[in-house]
Amino acid sequence: ILLFKVTPPMPRLTVDIVGLPDIMYANEVGKCSIELTNAGSSALEGIRMCSSGDVVHCAQTLGERCVSPSPSLVGAGSEERSVERSQEKVYSFEGGWRLAPGARAQWPAWIYARGESRSHRTVHIAFYFEPEVPHDKMKSRMLCVRRDVQILPSLEASLTISTSENSLQASLAQLVVRNSSSTDSFVLENLACLEKTWSLQSLAQGSGPDDGTLSPGGSASMFYKLHPSTAPSGGGEEGPVADAVRAFSEQPKPPRSGDPNQVPSRSVLFWRTVGGLDGMSHSGFQPLEAAVASSLSPVRIVVEVESCVEHDFSAQPVCVVPVTVLVRSITLQAARCFLEVGPDGARGRDAWESAEAAPTGKGPA
Image (cartoon, rainbow, N blue to C red; front, side, top):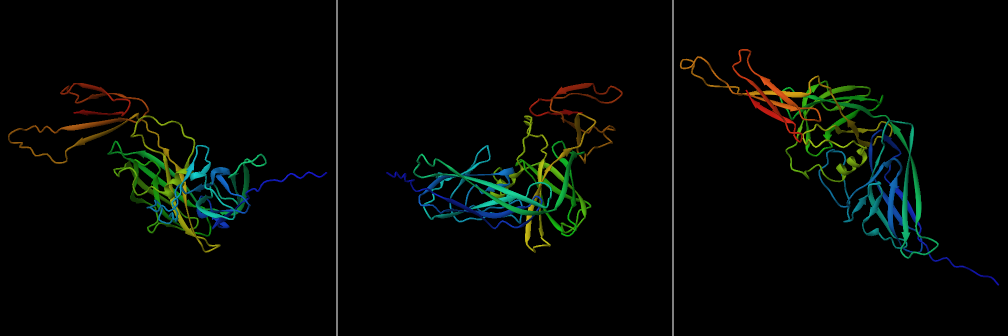
């Protein structure tokens, strides 16, 4: 007697990464799409995806177009679907994304050549899926995909933030960039702050290139004004590209203090180039963790006075001009300040203490 145990029909997922280049530059962002095909005889659902090193980011919505902080990086799509990203950096598609037998679907994604240049890098991506009708022989399956990419050198950059001499809120940021490539030139597009409530404004000073192009082996130094942004939240720099940049730039950070005026330290430098080996356009961004220049004083002091005062000296030989002294603590704690005016004792000694939530004090002189 022969007994046969018939296995029910099972789904079979195949994956292809469409548009992934063979050559990328260090910290380049490559636009591509993930093509999913159900080559099995039954439907599948519950598709989830993750990548080693978190180098793949799926667009949060498909069909969304908006202004990007990088002119050479744009998002595109044609359907109205969405994808969620968990704290474990696992992507799950809206509604489980059911694929019938023989069905095919595409989803836009970004591949990030994170870190320093090396000869080759292997991109590992894992996909999890489930049969529409579960059975004992198959509750879930996993498909692993790997792609090898050649990585070329790009830019090295550093950002230093120092205090401003004439403003309590604004700071001075110095960007130093060096082209690590011996053959390719890079165009510096934009320096953007990851914190939405802060902005960087170029001061057009330093040794930066006039046209924004950094020649092979060249270097540049540029200055920016870092100040609180006046643009409303949810502005034009939100969208697929901004989401991808924030996802790729996520790093474990210590909790920030409660001071909303604390100077931010995370920024990104966008760039583009035309590859000398493949003749293709390449775009990416350099993540920057700014170093805040140390100060000998725990407070910042700015004196405000009217630039023009009218006074009749024939009627009164002494002109009294109002002066405002602004003091801000640049430590994480409140600062108690004392102000003494005039060696002749014309004004006594004032004392005030700023609140911890917003360590800024003001005292008239």
